[in-house]
Length: 142
Ligand SMILES: [Zn+2]
Image (cartoon, rainbow, N blue to C red; front, side, top):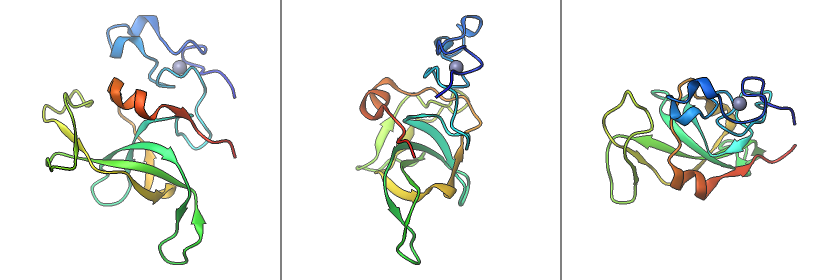
């Protein structure tokens, strides 16, 4: 695996110390270059669901998922979709990692969906420490 070109592998950029404590926006602090498909090399990471309204989703794990139609295994990321509507079994993420969004975010329970339904998140979002601690692990090598 190669080093991140933006932070030279340190995971931090000193001149952006005022933004997200200087955590490198390119590699999200991992110091590793991104995988070819544009996803970070470590879990968890923020992405968007391509379906519906391109909702923010927290991708927490890579695990086998099955195609709904032919039941064949496909590359899938286990993720937790984010919503603004609280429910008893949703996990509150407050403050919202999206600084432009004053409303708290609620994470739904984990779901498996094929990878092609998720795309890298173009926006800088803070990763709450409790979520990072819980889900942080490297992506599986193919
Ligand atoms: Zn970096």
